[in-house]
Image 1: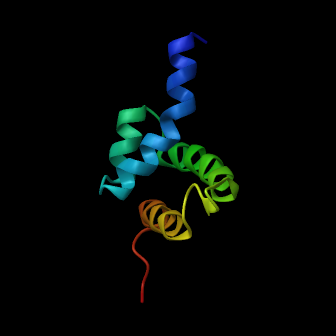
Image 2: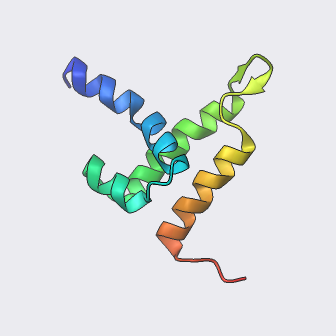
Length: 84
C-alpha cells in the first residue's frame, strides 16, 4: 500500500464521522469511498469505539451524543426507519 493510500485509510473514519454529523447520508459516503454502507459502518465503528475511550482534557474524543447520532444514522441506512 502506498503511503498516500495508507494515510487516507487511516483518516477516512474521521471524515466519515464528521460528514454524517454535518448531514451526509451513509449511502453518499459509501459511494464516495467505493465500498458498501456496511463496510463504511464497520470502519467507522472500529474507529469510534476507540475514540469513545480516548480521553482528551478529561473528556472522550467522541462524545456519547455524537456516537449515538452517527450510530442512529447508520442503523436507519442499514435497517430502514425505526418505527415508534
